[in-house]
Length: 340
Image (cartoon, rainbow, N blue to C red; front, side, top):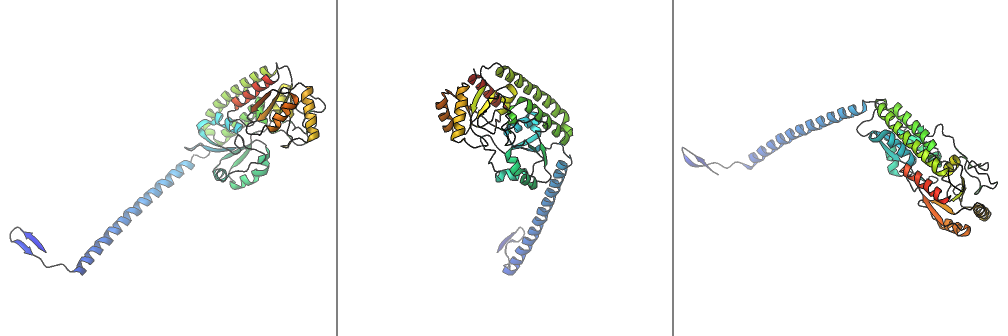
């Protein structure tokens, strides 16, 4: 090895032994590794401390809404609409039975079950899906508050027969022995009651945002009342009262405004030959010219009935509208057209 010295010029140096080189290299390697490990450990501890502080800050606010919002679960889309109108960005809402799904047979997805583990409040509405699944859903998150949104709602009985045999012009038929009609969201008056129930429970859970909930609830109730007045005005002036519908979704509109719903299905089942013959006779006798069916359903049977009774209007409605005011008024306007 050659090295330059300013006073003596170039000088040949003795070679360094390989063993000395290895020793030098390993010593520096372990020193560097130990230093890197200490820096990494300090970084991990700092990150862990910051995470603990962040979590403590989030949980320290009790029941008030944090950055992610209060986690709310509901059964059907009209409930979700109510919650969002009252709470806005303070909540995150999960709907279990989406529009187009069958609440009689729907089963939660794995993703929904995972989300329920973080849910703060579940608002029920009293449909068949809840009877089958709420015990399991509650067991998946024992800290989740399960609260009925339909407290105080007066229900009507489900139709036992496919047509009103005695000609009674009320949807609250004495034939109903199979339970109550679950479609309470198709009644503005009942939606107002549910809105008040939801608003009251949100205030209890998150009192720090009471003013927000109260202001939004007041605005929401005014909107529902306006829709109720508009519905009463439109349906109060129709010429006929009877209409045929595939699934008995509009029973509450019929009950509230003096109409007669003739449902094709009963308890989710199509009618047999005798019941079908009676339904067609009832529809003909009452001059039915329109048939309603639900979004996503097959309309083969509806087309068959329409041909037999001479109905020229087939109207699709959303049985569980996500945009509730739009869904309600589409059904109301459809009825006005069908009954005039």
